[in-house]
Length: 264
Image (cartoon, rainbow, N blue to C red; front, side, top):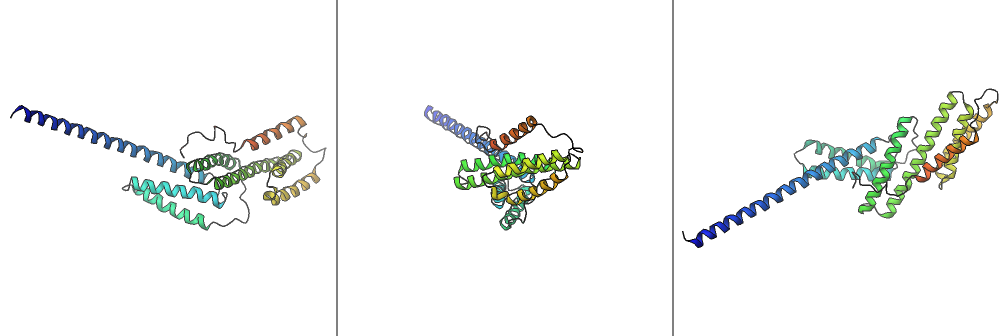
């Protein structure tokens, strides 16, 4: 074999090795990218399911429920394509499809769902904050138009106010059961004040009337001789300031809302 043939053979071998290394690296990168995407989608699916499970049935308006259910459906479809051999993805996809169909059929409830225990209220507040972030990310990606995103953010704010009112009503009920009628009246007043300060007062008109009737009946039973001391003005002012700050700060699109999240 002459030198030219040897050199040509060596060049071909080197070229083959380079091609093999390139192909192997490309395959490895695609496999790693696929694994990262799959892990991110599974994390997103868990978070979305947790978000929905944090609300009692019928709590979310139809538009918000549909937005979350559609996203769950899309995530399940992606997972089923990435891991077609995984039976759980097929089951999740079927379940997501059924839930989405049910969400489309969802009618406006006859009455709003009110939260009645501290655990429900705590979970709902956390999930509303997550839902607000979620809507912001969908708008950022272009999945939701600016107008639809704003509409749904306003719905979330209304729900946040409703949860805060439910919390005060619950505290009022506890105070009344404990024989502290003045404290109970204070909490009912707080609830009514929050709803009356809201820009969409008509949204809470029925609840305001209901709580005012309860407050009137409670005031009729008050007696200076039998009641616990009323909250002093400093304590009352401090509580009102805390509630007002909590409500006014909800939904502010500062850096906290824009942190990277599983929805990104």
